[in-house]
Image 1 (cartoon, rainbow, N blue to C red):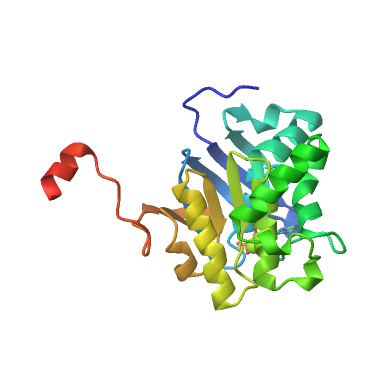
Image 2: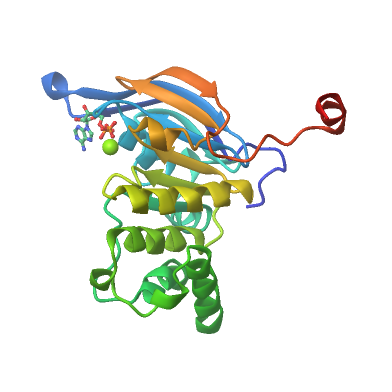
Length: 251
Ligand code: ADP
Ligand code: MG
């Protein structure tokens, strides 16, 4: 399943999602189309009920659309069987949820190793990769702590490490700072910024402007439709990298 070189990480076309039947029918997504290129950092914004989580769950292959197509890394998700889908979900997508979703009474290290257990990676390699991921989020000194021995911010950093440990093509985060205080929000966003600078593709859902300000691109949903799609310079990020000709012009 080698993707063609230049396929975008995500290609979404006319995605519709309806819940329920008849009078109770809700159209959560009303025809979403978008591409996300490798290395992009996209924030999806919108009021509560605008369809953000529905879109995220479909992007992460946790749910299926009513109609429309969705390609991840060039693979048409709608055409995959259960087994292929499970592999895609395990290897190509990393998730971070608002409520952390760590397994209680398992150490941080064991939590981060878990996707590799499902992925069939051997124990020694699993351990090494999980430790490296925990180091990336600054938790080397907490690897043997269980979730209830960690602060909310630390738990979310474990969740980010767990999402990263499979080296996914795409990191999806649904309101990752929604349950965090200001300081921990800053920590998690700084990690996301670093991951973005190192070339990771990130799609983050938020309803907070301060959080969205970290992204390179912002999409706004209203009632299941994209009403805005704009690029922005990140507020605290490094200056844009210029081409030599541009550099000559400004220096
Ligand atoms: P957001 O994440 O932006 O708050 P959601 O994607 O959770 O929005 O919800 C979009 C719409 O779909 C809402 O009207 C919500 O009530 C509805 N919805 C979401 N999940 C379900 C479900 N499992 N069954 C029925 N309706 C749902
Ligand atoms: Mg939501």
